[in-house]
Image 1 (cartoon, rainbow, N blue to C red):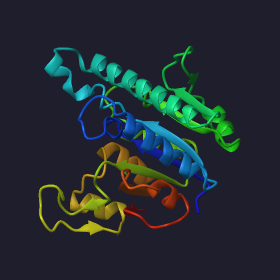
Image 2 (cartoon, rainbow, N blue to C red):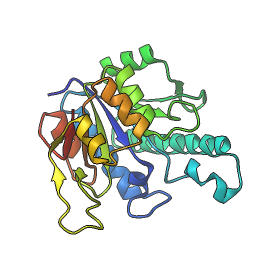
Image 3 (spheres, one colour):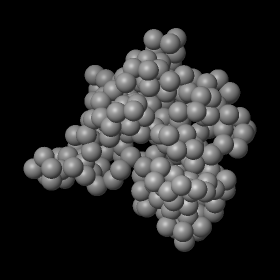
Amino acid sequence: MYRRLVLKLSGQSIAGSAQFGFNSDSLTHLAREVIAARDTGVQVAVVVGGGNVFRGNRSEDWGIDRVEADNIGMLGTVINAVLLRGRLAAMGEEDVRLMTAIPINNLAEPYIRLRALRHLEKGSIVLLGCGNGQPFTTTDYPAVQRAIELGADALLVAKNGTDGVYDADPNKVAGAQRFDRLTYQQVIDKGLGVMDQSAFILARDHRLPLHVFDIDRQGAAAAISSGEHIGTVIS
């Protein structure tokens, strides 16, 4: 059983079956998964993506600078985090802390590592928004970065509709095989798209275990928190 975990949620997980926007049922499901994981006794921090609001890599489509586009994406993560905090509160969770890499004092606390650690040690659910506050990175990188900074035992990489890492896209290739376990080097050698490459290399260099699993599977996060093998483990 783990002591402390970071859960990476994509913006798409909040959008549900749609590519963009918000889905109330999906938000409720995510809140339940976070609560269930924390209720196993593990300390939980959540890095929230913002792709359902805006993606920085679409800057050319909108005719704006990439830095500005990434700034919009970071604000999108805050929208999602506030939504998740609100749903957690509505479900009875009173001690939820939202911390952002960019100061937004009326909505959240600034991310300070030692303060985040104190919140976790007291049993608070900690939501982390704005990525790491810098452009040109996906939220994969700050998810790994925060997991390392906070001394997490593992990073739970939540996917939507995919229950692990496959040797080919299971939605396109019939008979694609799922891996139960992989080493970091195997992922690199096989060219498997687990996450942003820079984020994956950071995880490898710091030997941060990755659990890739389907967030749509009810109770999956809690089961992993309790030591059950679900999805694909990379270590």
